[in-house]
Length: 75
Image (cartoon, rainbow, N blue to C red; front, side):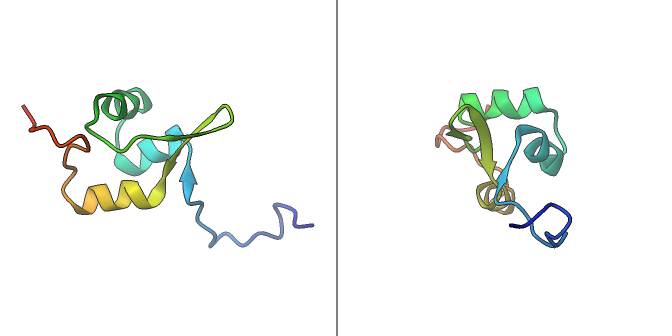
């Protein structure tokens, strides 16, 4: 069994907490949640009672210029 002391620091989680995803984007957690709910940002996934954001979706979204996920035009 691996303990946290034996896991290399180079491992990057694929699923991010709201706090981690917001930090990656440089915005607040409530702002990320609001954008996700409105379709302006990638939606989180629910695992049991936990809410997580896929790192790959966040990075792809940034690389694409942060377009609305729902396809609507920005105001």
